[in-house]
Image 1 (tube, rainbow, N blue to C red):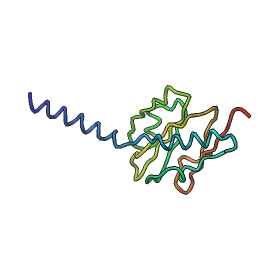
Image 2: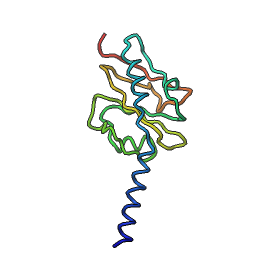
Image 3: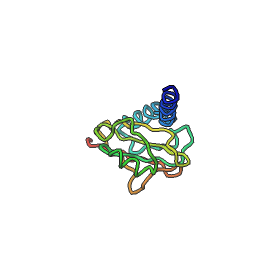
Image 4: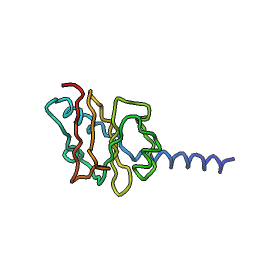
Length: 135
């Protein structure tokens, strides 16, 4: 009985460590919120706000499924925001060396966001467009 208990505890620890290494970046969320709040702004430069190492970021629209997230990322990532059931946020997931390192929930603030025809953002191509649905 004791070896089984140790195995289960070890397994739970390893699973917990895998997801816990992904940081929910609330500071980035607040910075983006401030930029979007200013109605004169039409875009957000992510590179200037992300003070950590990343080489790719993917912007997920409201109602994106878990399967869609994993497919676009190319890795398994358990979405903690439950974006598949929400329309009040966009989910921005950052990768470095094909590993998810951080994510941010972007409050819509009566706006939509896009990265145009790009599949993902990079530090050299980092603009998110803001489209407001009120004038």
